[in-house]
Length: 241
Image 1 (spheres, rainbow, N blue to C red):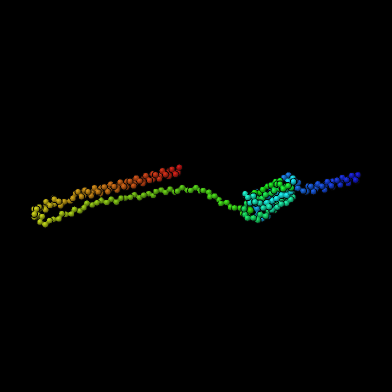
Image 2: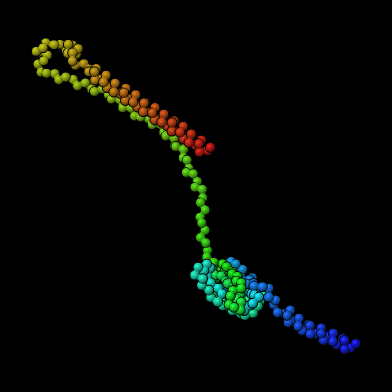
């Protein structure tokens, strides 16, 4: 009975001894290359821990490298090449003391024959201060030009100039005319020594013409003023609509 118990305990102890190391080691989960951290677009600086998974059925090693983003020339700098399987663990330490800009990480898992089993990328990693985008100015509504009401024009009072009739110049008296002609003073008064009515009539017509012209000019100005106000009212009405 005791031998049976001892045999059972020994077998159990051997089983536990074989199972524990296998449980402690990471289990291969096929060909996997996964970068869990840093994530795409993350801002980083200094020493950056890289977490992920690197496994393969015929695992030989994995490789961590960084390069610019975008990377048209396919230029990479390798900073880690461990030869151990890792699952959801820290797979490397990236020194991100680099010039400011955008970078990307690359994880590659290799088989024993040198072929690539799997690979993964972390893109758009920001090192340093990200560039500040220049804001695009937002167009603002230009306020309409203020409408000024025409000032009230003062009523112009035209100056009417009335031409005075010329003062008649008395005809000179020739010496000896009274004795030679035998004309009496009464006959000279009734003759050419009277007022020149033609000149007086001409002056009156000129004055009347000037007065009529002035009134017509005043009427034209008042009519233009009324038309200007009417046009301004119509413009205001249309702008309010």
